[in-house]
Length: 463
Ligand SMILES: Cc1cc2nc3c(=O)[nH]c(=O)nc-3n(C[C@H](O)[C@H](O)[C@H](O)COP(=O)(O)OP(=O)(O)OC[C@H]3O[C@@H](n4cnc5c(N)ncnc54)[C@H](O)[C@@H]3O)c2cc1C
Image (cartoon, rainbow, N blue to C red):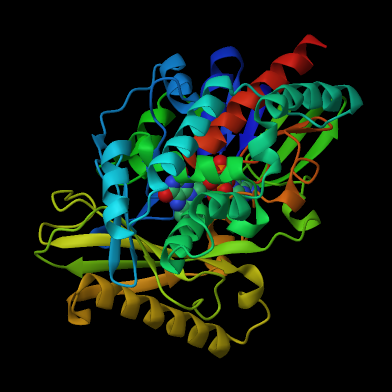
């Protein structure tokens, strides 16, 4: 009999297994051969590719993720980036230097304006103060827990009422005025989109400040791919079964029988790194997702690790004007041989664009989008298409097939979604983690959700 079975080996599942396995008898079940979910790495022939996530940010003293890793004696030796991302729009390149002063000087050169100093200092100060006070308890499993949650959020709300209530777009324009270069607004809006999954008009100023500030925190390149992080973490994650899929859980006198593709187990509790019976995304009709293009490039050139390239119009069958491009390091021979790069390019799409298509329609849509992406990528970075050794794409359907989710990325952090629409880390006897449930995404967001779920588990064991 296990105390906890953890279903799914994404960031949420693996990090939950790390903490729970120290106190309880646990088993983590992952359907794929490798851990990582959207943040893993896969291999095809002699090349490796990052599945989705490519940036490892906010791993820094005082931040939730660093505290979590330190507390669990997980240490890494990663390569810090001076320029976490470069954004290209209309032949202008904005390097998001991690050094704030350097960045302000640089952005003033690209978009000269006397408000930069005040704006960028204000947003970073706001982000720092938010993270300093960050201590949330979040659980909507019953009225008592909801009132504890409201109290916890209330404290945060009182401290940050003004930036929470102010619209991001209006506040941005109050700094820069209506006549600001429209490329600057596009740059800000597209940077916001990749972190908060939404646009300036739909969100508040606090969300904008947090989204724009991430490059000012430590960002790292992970040699050998993002999956390498899981190789370290899994050593402390207790018993793990890969290539085994959870099918169902049946209650049996206060405990559960868990049926998988390989066996039947008994457990007292279950943690889901999936939305099983907590279909918050489906309830809210959330269909935002990603199209990802993987390619190998032969080139002697040197590239930054991350680019966001913005074009004038929204790509067909997507909901975005920008692609997020990540290159492997030129000396990272685990990802690609010397002289070649492994590249992951992603763009926001919607699951509905890929629904109810004939095989031929689906193939054509995929091919057209791949071509559009490759054209922008090659034209912008001055790459000859002949140097692309191979390329293949993944639609929401591909993700659905492999990791069993078609809607990807975190919740949209928008006014209409706040609070009551988010999932609960506990529903009945089941616990939940991952970006489907906790209102934050990526490494930092999902780890924050696991820390919260731990508090919920501790509280429910006390009661
Ligand atoms: C294209 C893209 C780019 C991104 N870029 C970044 C980035 O640069 N940096 C960043 O920090 N974040 C990024 N993110 C976000 C980040 O990848 C996610 O927020 C995070 O990986 C989600 O983790 P999760 O714990 O919710 O689990 P998921 O990644 O959803 O993993 C769930 C796991 O459960 C397994 N599973 C599902 N059903 C079953 C079952 N029945 N039985 C057993 N196992 C099952 C799946 O195989 C999977 O391994 C990106 C996301 C996408 C899609």
